[in-house]
Length: 415
Image (cartoon, rainbow, N blue to C red):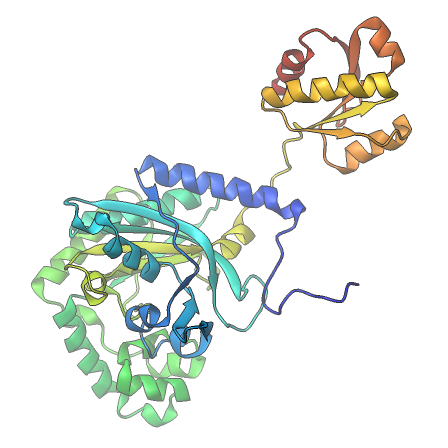
């Protein structure tokens, strides 16, 4: 064991895992491209105040989990704990916010939270997200939910449903906050310490508490449906109609609020049936762009934790299309170098054995390395003008004419 170990809460993604990551990443990017979303990449370091103002000072992310530090000039910076605030900042700072119409963006990359490490949850984790700016219709909320549902379906994950709710507009949310404040007065002393603070500063977040005692105490809080203005009620009804039309299974959960301060109107989470851990979540945040210094802009989006998603994707056997070239003798090695170049031009992954080991040893290496095929070159093959192509899965082998062998190998592999 080496002297140095990875920092607690961080994780390495090893070669045997990375093919599954690539598979999931490919499905996600192909799906969002079908909806005409464009990729945005933001820095992992932002001003600390960006997250304090957007996510909320009283959220666990900001108050407990954010990695913060001062740089050499004393500026307060943070490793990004989530992607929406950075995307909004980039949207405002760029020319995108000055354009009329709808801006559809997606991001992908590492996020950082000082959370308690556990299976599938790390302090550096990867997140994929979609953000749509400029669309005020509930059909845009439906579109991002549809994208998320399509990604999950395309990954072969079955038996999922969406929990959806509405927090209403700013005025509805304010009225509902007062109802919650009044409701918790009689139970405040029995709430957890965090919820006692929330009851004064961010009452809605009491409903997002994971403490089972708080969950029991607050299960009879009145639904927001009773205080929605007509416009917000109609908005939510239209969204549910969109989900029904698209065949997306959903459940209206009246205590769903999400744990971030910036949400208004629609909020949603997606779950596997019989599993209480959300796969992904999102919602609408019409006030955030203006709050961070831009012009008033409606917006909606979602985020997926990649580690959580990968747990649910069935591990597929890798397609063994890689070729391992085994050369015996200097002349064979020179020919192998030429063939390797020809195969790479045909987009076939190739590795060459330079170590002059025995054929048996080299074939063992090819098998352990997950290669589907081996090209064997020796004096006999050079004299005959052929190569030997061995299928590492079935053990069968055949001679292939040396001339134009790369194209022939490609055709055999593709069959």
